[in-house]
Amino acid sequence: MASRGGGRGRGRGQLTFNMEAVGIGKGDALPPSTLQPSPLFPPLEFRPVPLPAGEEGEYVLALKQELRGAMRQLPYFIRPAVPKRDVERYSDKYQMSGPIDNAIDWNPDWRRLPRELKIRVRKLQKE
Picture 1: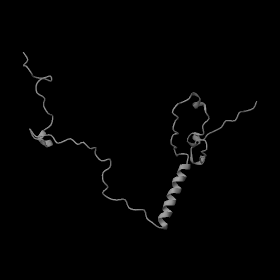
Picture 2: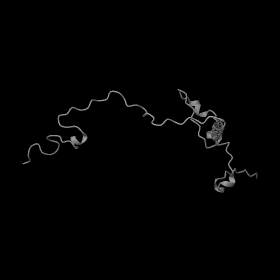
Picture 3: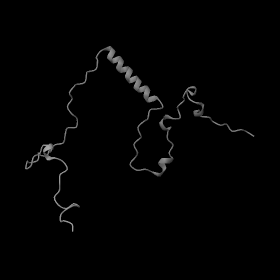
Picture 4: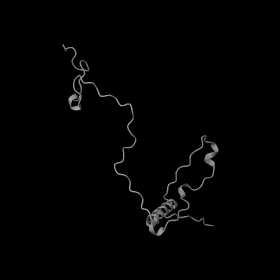
């Protein structure tokens, strides 16, 4: 006959870790709970270096802005999606929209790409 209280969840619960290793002794009160949320960002240890002033700094800043503007004109630039209206209407999907991601205006240098990728437009043969 099986003994009482043994196995299968009966009896006293056992902790799976050592309480003294965590820093809590037997009979000690638990540490108080924190009522405030933790700060969003930790304090900065090193302050950022100020931008270089003068003609050279302005020139580098102008170059950077020019590069960013040129990158936005490339066909690889993904524009953010246009926010949708609150109600989607049936006729919205049939409205004419502009080229998607500027794909139609793209004219690559075909000498740098394989021939298999070149777009070929077939002309209709007249009988």
